[in-house]
Length: 405
Image 1: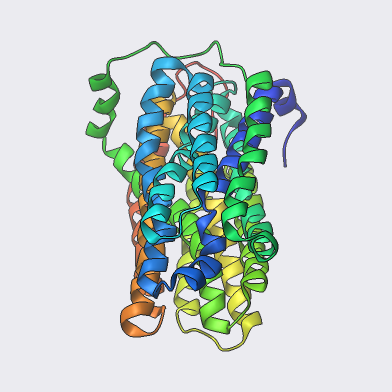
Image 2: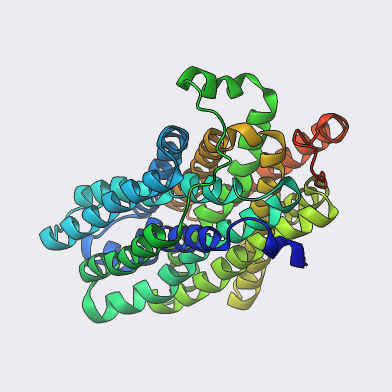
C-alpha cells in the first residue's frame, strides 16, 4: 500500500518524532476516561458528572488546537510542541504531588490535559510540510496514528490504578511524556518549506471559504466519534455489561486499537482511490454502527463487535479527511489543522457528554448514539454535495503529481 518512493521523500526522523509525540500526548489526553470507573467509585460521581469529567479534556484540547495552530505558524511546530509538552508534564506532576480528593480538582486537571490534545495541531503540520501532495494521506496517516496512545491508556491505566491507586497513575503518566519530549527535541526538524508568515487576520481569512467549514464538519464526526468513544467506552462497558474496570479497559483498548491503526490505512487508501470515495463509504459504516449499538444488545460480543467496526470506520475516516485537507489548504495547513482539529474535539466532547446525559436522564445510551448517527449521515450528504466541485476545481500549485480526490 505504501510505495518505495514514499520512503525517499520527506524526513523520516521528523515523521517518527511526530508520531511518538502525538502518541504519548494522546495517551495522557484521554487518561481520565479509563480511570473514570475507579475515580467515580471514590468520589461517588453520577453518570452526568462522569460524562462531563471525561469530556472536558476533549473540549479544551479542541480550543487549544486553534491556539497551537497559530503558534505553529508564528514560531514553528517544534518550539510549539516543546512548550505544550512541558505544560502537560508540569500539570501531571503538580496534581500527583498535591493528590486532591475532589471533583473540582479533577476538572482543573482536565484543563491541563487539554494541552496534550492540542498536540494534534503540532504533529500534523510538522510532518505534512516535509511531504509532496501525492504522499500527504500516507504521511499524515502515519503521524496521525499517534492517536493509538489512547490504546495504552485503556490497557494499562485501570490495571495500574488497581495496584497503585489512580492518583499515582496520573503521576506515572509524566514518565513516557518525558521520554517522548526528549525524542522530539533530538529528532524533529522544522521543514524548510514553511509558508510565508501571515498576520493573524490573514490566517483567519480561511474561515471565509466554505471548504474550511466543510472540513470542520467532516472531522467533527470522524475524530469526534473516535475521541468521544475512546473517552467513554470504559464507562459504557462497565455500566452496560457490568464489567470490572480492568476488563472494561481491555474492551475499550480493542476498539480504540482498531480506530488508531486504521488511520494510516484510511490515508493510504485515499491516496490510491480518492479521499471523497473512501470517506463516503466510511460515514455510511459509522452511522450504521451507531444505530445498531444504540439498541444496547445484551450480548457483550455483539456490542463489542459493532463498536469495533464503528471505531475502525471512524479511524480510517480521520486519515481520509487529512488526505484532503492539505490538497485544498496546503499554504494554511497550520491554522487549518488547528481549526479542523478544534471541531473534531468539539464533536468528541459532545458525544462523550451526551452519552452521559442520555444515561442519566433516560437510563439508556440510545439517544446519544442515535443523534451521532444522524450527524454522520448529515456529513455523508454534505460530502456528496461538494464532491463534483472539488474534483473539477482543485489543482496542485507546485506542478507535482496530483493526488486522488
